[in-house]
Length: 208
Image (cartoon, rainbow, N blue to C red; front, side, top):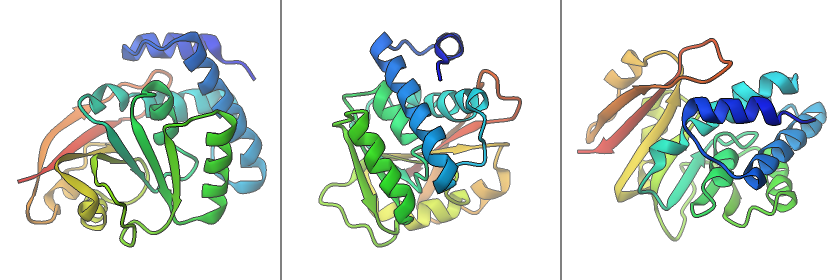
């Protein structure tokens, strides 16, 4: 399963420069995702061609918006999106993949081992119960819950100067209106994902 050309063209379109080794790691991750998906039901998308845009490129649109961050928490990571592509693109970033589903975290641990991602830690826990020794300056989610619920359940994990960077589809007007007290939207950015014919937005939320 080789999708180097689609990946390379997609990366150029989103303005992200990666090394050949990083592209090889992304392809390796895609291969593992497709293989494990046959028995673990990690994603509803089964065609590897569609996985390039729906999973890899979509996840990688987050990376330019992580500038300044050193510790990233991916809440409800599932099959590892956007955390694993972000970890591959930013090897200097410490990434924690958090999911309460044991089958999914089994896959995530195996993927991190096989891809030799030393900057990735996998945790099996519910987000509201997770109590790490160190908090996170960036917290993301791609398909975990509505924005207000995401912030409520994970706000104890945010560092004092941290940001939530939530990946959403259409502009989430209602979800923004329901944010818990003490949090405000810093910006909402439209994301253009090559090969994906759907609206995507990044919502940056900060404490007041």
